[in-house]
Length: 440
Image 1 (tube, rainbow, N blue to C red):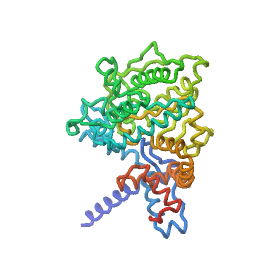
Image 2 (image 1 turned 90 degrees about the vertical axis):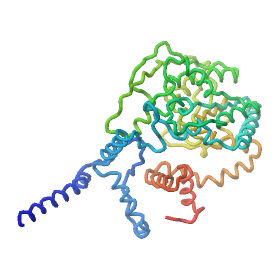
Image 3 (image 1 turned 180 degrees about the vertical axis):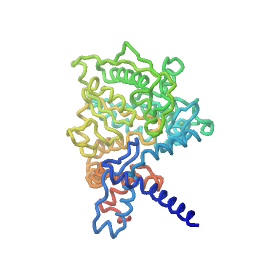
């Protein structure tokens, strides 16, 4: 009996040590922040004070911080993700799924390809009508407006989408935007249709397996096409992008495996796809590089930014990411958002305004830029009154985006209430600004 009791005690001690081991390692280690892509990690522990202690928020925030920084957080996440990937062919990336032959997709881009997210046609018609008014107004100032409809991976790789998503298509946001752009004679470039024509004859993939965006090769073709289109539209000569050499490899470079990084696996799968990487060169001619192009876009324009297109071809024109973040920042070392700028001055400091959105984001095309520009030029008094009213809320929203703890809280609200992250951020910003009753 004594032997059994002793054995039981030893087992209890071992179990206790196993439970305490991660805590001890976390306590002794200087830095236990996990290296995980795409996850919002609390940077610093919450500060204990009277308000958060009695409101009950301190313990919740402390638990979140401990959960983020415990010693084996990264290993446990990678093991869990590897299990789901290897056993069930599932990826633990929010709103992404695996199709046939290991192609990964944003589920929203599958829905857009089959028209499951299609807007009411009258909404698209009205937005494009306003775009025509803005186009005509800017043209009188010597500025051209260009709408570019980029292909998403769902539309570009339909053959690898799982059968459960496939059904007959009557209309998509893309088809309706193109239709009403033609009706209203709005300057536009339909890159989705262009890629459809390229696909059967392209020697190299236009979309990679483990990437969310077009391939680097497809990106180069898109940039070359955009440059040519702007030259005709604005009657100008821009520096050309060219390549004489293409490197073909079977391991993705650049952004061609951006989703793979977010999968946070223990062991990455083989990348058995031949991808092409043109060795690009820009024509060096300062006399040609004088047409300043402002680009308002989703993440599809980040690739050309990394490539150097704005500096080498667009006279240093800015990139307004989702009509929010300004790239590059006009104030070095400081993050600047569009609402902080003088919109009229910024618009009229360019020769071309280009809105480029992939089909999965056409439901929010321009992120209110068209509506704002329309109101700015047709009813400036109401525009500036609205801008001033929103300034306080936008100030707090910027803080939320920049402070990991606040962003994590907004992200959790987004997930719990099944609303877009931007909506959750705005809600929290309105609370901070005192527009809503404070609710914990």
